[in-house]
Amino acid sequence: MLLFTRLFVRKKVIIILSDVTESHSEEPSLTQQEPSLTQDLFQFIFVGFLFLGLALFLQQSLGSDTRDWLLELRELLQGSGTNGGLWTSSAIFVIISGAAISLGVPRLWVSGAAGALYGVLLGIVVATVASMIGALTVYLAGRRLLGAVVKRRFKGQFIMWRERFQQNAFWWVLYVRLFPLSNSTLTNLLCGSCRVPLRDYLWASFIGFLPLTFVFAAFGSGGIKGNLNQVLLGLCLLLTAIIIRLLFITLQPKSIAKS
Image (cartoon, rainbow, N blue to C red; front, side, top):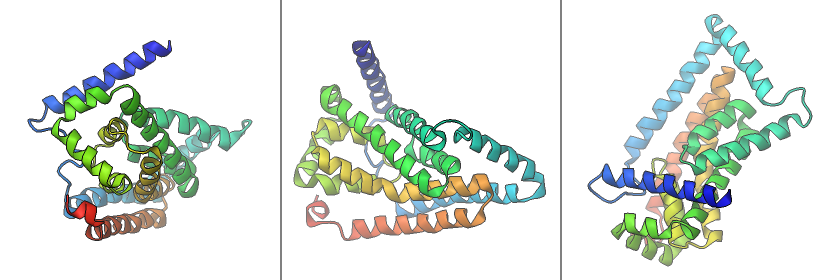
C-alpha cells in the first residue's frame, strides 16, 4: 500500500511538472516573474473587497437568514456538542488541509476557510500548522523521491536556485515565500531537491507564511460573521504585509542583492 501511494504521488507530481513546462516556452519560475507591488496590491485588495461585500450583505436583513445558516453550519463543523468538540475538529481540519496543500491546493484558501470556521486567532494557528505540514510533505518528496525529476524539469533554474540556496538558504526561502503569487508547490519541491537545510526551510517558511495567513484568516472570519471590522483589519494587515515585503526586498542582504 505504501509503495502504491508513493508511486501515485510521484506520477501526479510528474504530470503537474509536465503541464507547467509544456504550457510555457520558458522554464518554470518560482515567483512567476516576480510580480510587481502594484499587481499584488490590486489582486489582494480586490479579494479583500469581495469579503467586505460579503460582510455587508450578511449585515443586511436580506442576508440575515444566510448568515444564520452559515453560523449554524460553522458550529456543526466546529464539533459543537460532541466529545472533543473544537480540538477534534481542529485536528481533522489540519490533517485534511495539510494533505490538500501538499497536493497543490493554495494555502491562502485554507487560511480563509480556517478563519471562517475557527475565527481569526485559532484560524491562524490551524492554517499555519496545515501550511507547514503541506510544505514539509512536498519538501520531503522533492528530497527523497523526485529530486531527479525536478532537476530535469527546472534545468537552468535548478542550478541557479541551488547556488542561491548554498549562499543563504534561509533568506532565499523567505524571499520566495514573501511573494504571495509564487508557485508554492514548485518552491517546496525545489527546496527539497536542492537539499536546503530543513531548519532553515521550516523557519523561513513559517515566517514567510504568517503575514498573509493573518490577512486571509481575518477575511474569512469577518466575511462569514458579517463583521466589517475584521475585514477592514484584514485589509490593513494586507497593506502591512505588502510593505514588509517591500522593505525586505529593499533591505535584503548583499548576497541576495548581488544575485
